Length: 142
Ligand SMILES: [Zn+2]
Ligand SMILES: [Zn+2]
Image (cartoon, rainbow, N blue to C red; front, side):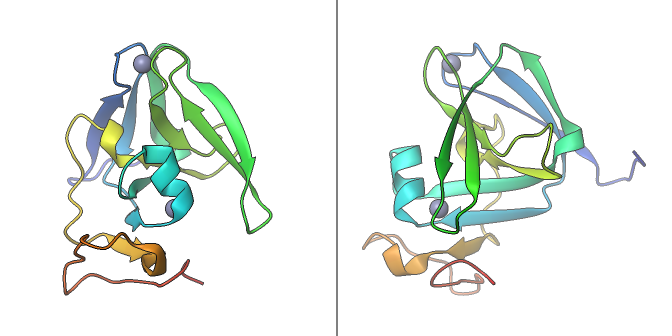
């Protein structure tokens, strides 16, 4: 992997600390997703997806467990979480997919979401404000 001046290592883990990981940054893209699945997954108002190259992701401690679900698109979403505390860590199988989606709240240093792309805004909770300049899609970008 070629190093650049902007390369950075991001660290993260679950709520209890049993699973820890590192990922090479900067992120390829950051999405804030207002879909109902992300709301369930995060048990909060929206999900934060930090897209990184799978090859840059290293497990530092513990082993996450996989739960898979079928998305509306027909694709299978592989969801990885801590077997101890249940915190969701990332979506996508890093052994098979080129990129995975790290769940933003699991990062030690919170991701900068000022310029994140907002998706599924048609199911956004009332009271959640999207920055005026943010790129947004009412569903998923084509
Ligand atoms: Zn945990
Ligand atoms: Zn979503």
